[in-house]
Image (cartoon, rainbow, N blue to C red):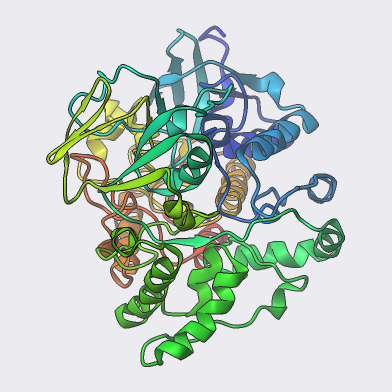
Length: 541
């Protein structure tokens, strides 16, 4: 693609955000090209193929709502869809709307630079392709840059080594092998039961235990699905406006959901258990919605956490292992709560060993295992489930430069700053989907993606109708929004989590709470109000 041939919009990433952007921008009549570093669509569901990989939002909610035809046509098989099924859904969307012809695969964007004189973005890929575009939209995903653990010798392990988010497409058979896995976040919690069922022996190296609730997954009853889909429009409205997370619900009629109890504080253990039992048996991350103040009231949060810790002690037979698995260093929900199938019960297997590397830290990974302070553990295969450089990693891995050559990395040196989580002062005609300062990872990503894309398309339509060719958020608006995001976060327990929401899992990363914690409904209202007020906070020319 020669530099001289410019397009209206360049999109970086062909996950769900990139696909929906391409669909909407085509409808506007804009010329668009998408650069995707993989050889297929799907984004995070293309890369994350580790054993047990599933979505933690229910299938019928984790799907596009923009096309009633699409949502009625596509049939999900399980309550929580597996990675292969979600990838097939992304492929179906791309093919159904004939999107692939505008996607350049195997093209990793390395640089995007804004030329003020031309009012163009110049985008370059690692393979040498270049394109000039009037607008640049980053659809790079929040969890798309995996990180290796900062452990000495990680490269010298002699056996097979697999990283959860870089899993071989052909899969891995662990039969007859001894396996070590580092990491008990969401990926580890999903993978551990599956690997344990195959391997001769699995050793789990845990630094930080995480709260997890049962998925209660299962095959969807298609008669029930037919009834659910009759109310799909009501459900979609509820996901967008009635729930802070947009994760979904299991009622045929969404309005029939039992309202949350105000607080767990002051209730007896029996009263708390009676309320939470219903949510535990129902399954899913909706568990935290049992009490309205679960993430703002420390006493209420502690009561909920105590309930989960007691559940762990009930499930895990060995008292010492159970206690090691009980999180005690962060309020429940301040790290993304995990949704599992038989995770805690897996530690009752004779072929599974849990190692607490807080008590005995890892000194070094050696060619045939891991050396701890108090001895060595040997195994054939090493699995790394050590997380991502979340929310900003993909953006800062590119050389993005705005007005006067300002690098985004310099702008965000002390933490990410944005207006509405979608745009950055000093970077005209640049949008980011579900960026820092938006609900993003605290929400059902499909709900947030659609809202962002619809809002961006509305802004571009406004510009076209008014004859504008350039937008940029005002510095004062950006400062106000950053202050508002921080104010909302400080009113919650989230900052006490020490999680990747704060960048706490990446050495040297500024500790800034990145998502907008007021919920998808409140955020949508703010964005709609900005648009209705002539896109307040944006300067157009």
